[in-house]
Image (tube, rainbow, N blue to C red; front, side):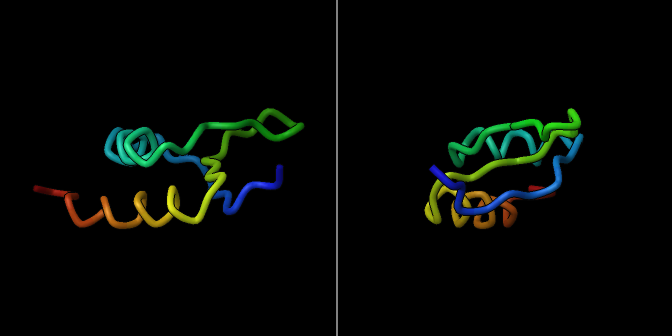
Length: 56
């Protein structure tokens, strides 16, 4: 299945928390570079919505 969206991975603990809460995954390219993978639109939207909690 083709992912809905892929983003460059972040080392920020808040971003990694958001990824887990949204149901996204950390995946790796063929060259070993990590990226955030979202299989559905809903996962990606949840990840973006959780950004409103940054700094809270």
